[in-house]
Length: 424
Image (cartoon, rainbow, N blue to C red; front, side):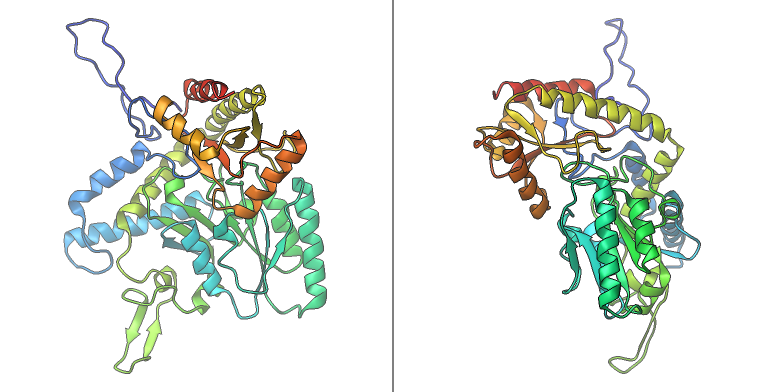
């Protein structure tokens, strides 16, 4: 959905310009600046800004006051929890726990794993889904296609169950869409394999949720982690949603006020709360929760199929344009026609990626990302693969990433392609 950054010109010189009415899924931005870095942090949606502005006059403590302001804020916080849970298809007995982001959510789950849990993941994950897991976790190689991911997981779980006690818990940790390539992973199929072998599965939905509906029940995943700042809400709000038993049995992620039901006079005379409060110690991020809920509500009311179709048209325009530039090479894990969201990583032959981003920003006011995207094992593997696939020896050691979403336009994509063509 295009964003109106400035009002259209008046038809009469003596008539004041009339700004276009804002819509909940318009995104905020700065006129003239082209933001193609949605995968790092998506711009704030109008719905989030409106929700924060409406609540700010009432801003007060949550779960800690009897006054009208505190009661209003507590209600807004718990309504946000319900809205977000409904948006992601949470089951009736799931917990919806507010965190800072996906990384925080996955670290919380890692702390809540029962003793002896083995975590199985793939080497193509973001660091947030690689680094929190305990020693002894199994990291599978990056597959060459989605079907290979399913086969590899089935083989690994079969072997794992033969070599250990069937009673020991196993957690499979996978992404919904790669933050490097945008390629979508076969989440429902991986969940079926995990459950067939008595394992649970957690979905890192940070990159998938902004682009496509994500439903725990439909995908049959046990846990889901997501970041608000990638879903058109402000920084500092995320959620972990999932089955209650492991979470209620684990020590609190954050010990402190709000996480307890009773504290006695002795040092360790503490009874911890059950439910989401157990892991939400301290004063919560009320505005972040309310903003994220507002975006979820706006997306829930939108025609997601139409939004996805528009994004796919822009993505095709971008990828086709890159393919037409002989000095630009796209990175990919799967085949060129694999389903993906609006993320493209690439390299410009003969150019350091940091120099390209600096030039795009300074000369064209275009913002993209360079580096290894907090997914070093995957990005380095794909850079090596790109050099082998093309036979080029002048590819840089880091990559560039352009990512799109609500507010992106064909004109912005074309501006990037024109700027990249000038580097040839």
